[in-house]
Length: 115
Length: 121
Image (cartoon, rainbow over all chains, first blue to last red; front, top):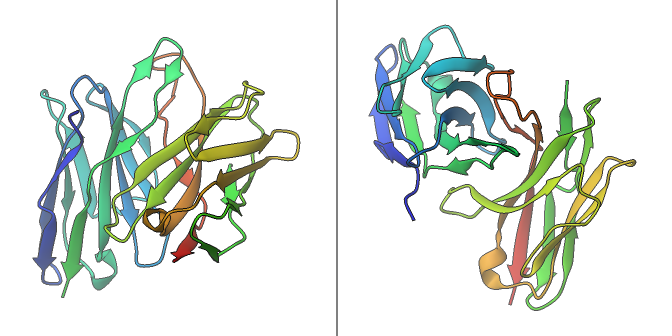
């Protein structure tokens, strides 16, 4: 079965640089989520998109932005990177059925290291 | 606001034995989902099991089962016949249940702090 695809899997950036993370959800899933997981921490919700519109926003810094495109893939743009942005970034997708929202399935994550 | 608490940072179990991981949560919602996700050393987040709050029957998936106590807001995971491959971090997670599209049902997950499970040979 198709899974959530994230690219790149690893990314190394310098402070103050910009990074773009990409996510390709499971086909026919209508919602994409982004989470940030710091070392030894639980994943923290950043932002979500339902049918290409932003649907919810969590603890996402103003330096970060995201969007979902017409083909449902999503990109997380991170500018003015700081050392504290080093983390594992997950994308997850799900869909809203007639009986409710189905579980989220996670991609493998992008490991971002800021030097 | 919802919160999820896992009070056991680390646990260990002998191979083939049974272990129970605890999770409590706080919410004013009446309808919601609860999940257990597994994160092995590869860091992949894998869905283990889910429970709808309106269902009284506890969910079961092969060797994994839950004990859902709605009144006590408790949601524990039991792993039977533990295997070495069960070694991982386990996260309990909460999600609101709203069935109407466009009604604000974003489905974001709120995670507990995680429990590291070590299965010993």
